[in-house]
Image: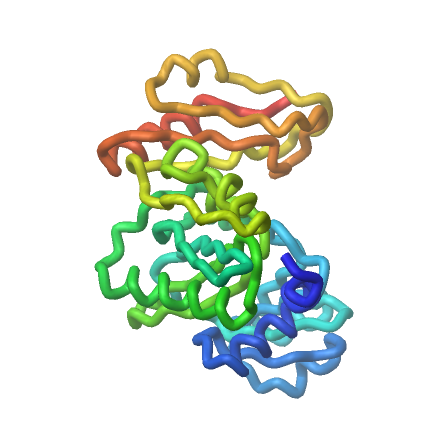
Length: 284
């Protein structure tokens, strides 16, 4: 993307201010310069502290449950966000080329590993009702249009238990929430990104089938040269595609690859994904 877009998105504080200035629904927030400012907020516990810069894959996020947590808070410029009681986490990937043509991929649902705040499952497409899917789609288009971005943009969102969609954060690149598009959509997020940055006509983003993506994470308690257990067994299953990232060394919760499962039936795809998750392990 353009350098101005990178500058904005690299700083979560600027992101949140962009949402506010452009009437994009997001969770209530405050900006702080240092952890001593936490005493002045008056936010109801629990709430989250997120580093403005250099946070990724669950790093740079700290949950404060009481004043006793102030001491362990980050001593750095941060955003403070109210706790969102959400029902689902969603993502819409949107592409825009220099001519202003825009295409969105169907909304997906994200299940996170609560221990490390990393995506565990991506389920595509989402089974939300059409009205909510339309809202998510329109939000992604509005953000891409307001940014005038050229390329791919992943828009992560919360669906609250009250039925409201709130934008969480942005990623201006091919994203974890779109890996399943390689096998699951007529055009992958990678193809679409190239089309967008070369100002070519954007491709058809419709889903071919139901798809579930699993992140292959290094197992807890193992660090060293990676050994992939269960690959032979997993490859016997129909509609299963393994992608390894070529990382020689594994460590706990390091992203080592992903597996995509394709099926005509959503529930069967999810069931098969859970089976794959039990079989394949990254150890040493």
